[in-house]
Picture 1 (cartoon, rainbow, N blue to C red):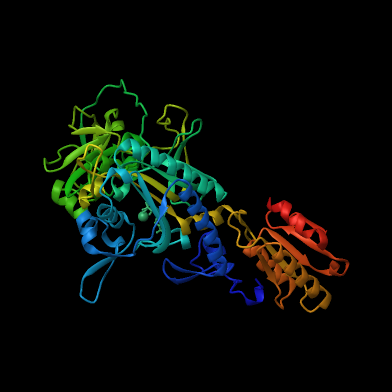
Picture 2: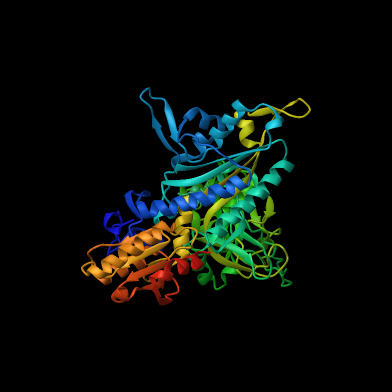
Length: 566
Ligand code: ATP
Ligand code: MG
């Protein structure tokens, strides 16, 4: 392609809202343009990289035996009502009405559609197992669309769904797709980890997320410093053993704590460390009130609360709800004298607290010398806190460390949840009707593209792994006014194209500095500059990432570039 004709609107300045490298560089290098918050145009360069990425995904899915289909974005509300997600997806689901006022959703994901499709088209075990996939636009009205392609409201996802007779068959496909995902991310040149994850709003058990390691990641990965163990921090169980104190239990004492609201203020006021206090937080678990107690220095993990109750929705209670229930606001909650309407659960660490402090369920008061069992009863002790760096690894090997990750893929064992809701059954080998066991598997395609840029850039712009790069070679004609150089540049351009190279040719009437800047920004790996030595038949080669450069005779250029590509 001649750059003079191509839509590559590079920018000198980046819009202020672009906070991270991938967002800034994709805008600056003219790969994408914003239409609305979380909604982007892909310009020719962006589209080329996207297509390369899609092809990698497609090849690996096909290789794993999945069949490509395409399902609609426009989905009747009844389907979502039947699955129960018309309500539980909340504001994230984009909704609209047709001219007859019939409600629809814009597909945020396709479990409902695919389950109804397979239900209607297959009725025998003979077609199983079956895996279908699509690469398609998804709509989610995210609360905080940000970071460009990383969290959009319209984005490209590869979603796959597998249908099985039993869990054994699901396990097999799950492993195949797990490996296909590994190959996809390896081929993208990404530094990533597959981590144990939570299944969130999807239901089901046994899930892994593929995380690209990056400081801008929104997820925290807890990994062992000595073994392979890695989990989303939400999911990592805490196996810490807490020591019991032998110190004598002192008498319970109620003390005034005026103006001390936060854990730190109370600890400072009463002169103890955070770890000697109890933190109590009121949650609403599917409408019932639950007071969750942890050690003062620990954080409640609401995913663990949710899983403990097998609940649909877990959210913080409002201060008014808390006051109505126990008679005190957020700053004074504790496990003593809690009315029966509120269930109290506590993290294992609380059991080993000794002469500790807690809120008195009376505004402005705390208890001192609190001893569990003696002073209050807990319905249930459980693992309820977030794991921390320094905790022992749950697999018994090594110590936990944290890293930030961008979730680019997610594989779930769904079980028969959706088949049950949508009545999707088939005749099994015994001739009996049975519901499908399912798996589902997603890759955030546009998010992956941005994640690659996060790992592949420097101060001057992007560079790309060979598998994704938008062009094989970038030819720069240093001076478009010098006839001799133009001639050689045109000749090299023709020659490389005829040998099958996909070439971007900067034939513009621009200063050399502008061309080099744009070239660094765009990030094609191999750059060929036609300059002063053109008359002697020499061009200059430069590698975008390593900066390595050398003069090469045009007669040797094709062979030279071929060796780099092999
Ligand atoms: P997140 O926790 O980041 O919101 P999710 O758990 O909602 O992700 P899934 O429903 O598992 O995501 O979707 C499959 C994949 O789609 C994710 O692994 C991610 O790569 C991608 N994805 C999800 N939401 C977005 C988004 N708003 N923008 C871009 N990609 C997304
Ligand atoms: Mg989400």
